Figure 1 (tube, helix red, strand yellow):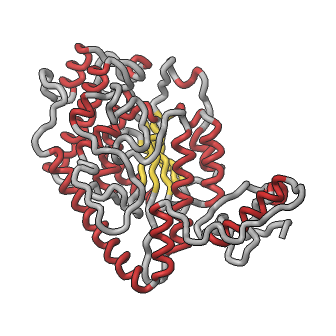
Figure 2 (cartoon, helix red, strand yellow):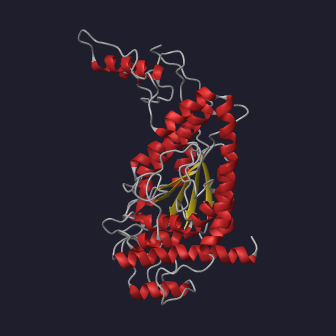
Figure 3 (tube, helix red, strand yellow):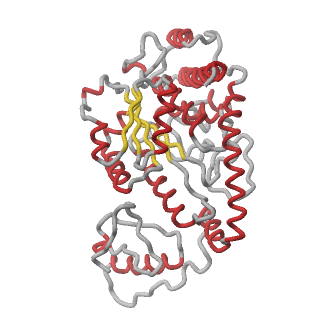
Amino acid sequence: MNQHNQDKAQLCINTLRTLSIDAVQKANSGHPGAPMALAPIMYCLWQEMMRYDPAHPSWPNRDRFVLSNGHASILLYSMLYLARVGHHAAQEGIQGTQQGRPVTLDDIKAFRQLGSCTPGHPEFGMACGVETTTGPLGQGLATSVGMAMAARWQGNAFNQPDCSLFDYHTYALCGDGCLMEGVSSEAASLAGHLQLNNLCWIYDSNAITIEGNTQLAFTEDVAARFTSANWHVLHVADANDLPAVRKALTQAKQSQKPCLVVVNSHIGYGSPNRQDSAKAHGEPLGEEEVRLAKQAYNWPTDKHFYLPDGVQQHLTDGLGRRGAQQYTQWQEQWTRYQTTYPQQAQQLHCLLSGKLPEGWQNNLPQFDQAIATRNASGKVLNALAGNIPWMVGGSADLAPSTKTWLTFDQAGVFHSPNTSHTNSST
């Protein structure tokens, strides 16, 4: 990266930081510390790594981003605003179900206010570009595993040797609180077992909670836990080291396993009196500390919600241009696909639009006598699955008991690439 681009990158990063702290200060509520620390991660991921076209936020093969530590929502909103996600959205071609309105500067200023599309935690359907609702810590991580599984299933179901429609990646940003939750361990175990190499979790390891140091309640070796769960673990010693962040994210994308990138950061980075302290976590910095933090960023201290010239254009030249090219290439494949594989294309249209295929209710069983509900459910599931090719379900390893095993001829099994699967009930 040449000096000009380095300067632009730092300008974008500090714009993310200052928009975030100004929004929290104006709302007199929120979490400034994580956005101040993680702005470099957000910038590098979106500007340099993700396959994403801001003009087509519903593109089915876009990379997904999940903010599991949802209290850092203002960082995501600021990124969506700077990248102009959805501002010039076009709806030609096949689309998914992305919802919400584009984030504007007025929405940033209305952070956490009633009626805004920028609530304290991301809500699907409110701001365009928010992939899923997050807030309860760990929930976003579990959802990201489902997204990665969906990508693999879609690829297996619809990709053809001469036309690959689905190969997107899912990225999730999380913190210590997310990894303290049991749901994250269960989700990580499943992802490692299934070898979801299209999944990357970025762990903000700052050693601070709202109560104090993480040592108060959390002393495990996180890297060792994930290694034992069949994950590839990488380390970045400083969140501000963009070359190191870039290298780790590149390696994660090339990994044959799900990847955890452990990033050491400074919560409240740039705040002279609150950096690396619990006070940076969940309350406004205060007007004087905002001024001092801006001073540390070489930022105009008398300006609020300041957008320097060239910031949005820099993102348009990077993320926007790359995403537009990738989207155009994918649309060309989709055009060929519809001609060559019309039946699969029609199914995909139904799936992405949330419609059921014609005749989905055919062959539903009738029960004239008492039958155990799980047995009745199993028969209905199999009847439906035979008419809805994209029906997916499961019950871990309990199918013989719960009667969720699909027995019709076309049914497949979602499992690890290196694991054969047999079922005792068949």
